Image (cartoon, rainbow, N blue to C red; front, side, top):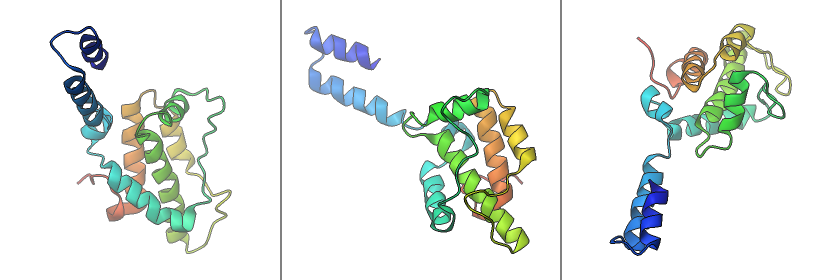
Length: 158
């Protein structure tokens, strides 16, 4: 659509460059959040705010996923999303990593090794079984809600 508008403006058709750019920028702005975000009720600003809060204590916690040569579909989807703007599903994964360590420390009353935190093997198996973004989003939302309870930025299931 954007290419068509720009092509028409360059071809000297009835559309001038300014309106074409306005429409193109509008299309980019409205498509900035993936369909997934709207469908799942994800508020990216709220996700980022919660990440910022948790990173004050848990900044050393890294993902268990290596993006240098991902082989599982779930890892490929997560790693590819880093290139998206915004990288929503990757940021949802980041929040989940932080939330899990937060939950472990709160449940045990013990500090964990942030450079090598314990992992939730059951969750990782469910996440890694996903083959599409919708599955990943659902699994991440469920796990993050479980880890953060009422302080999760995602809609809570009744």
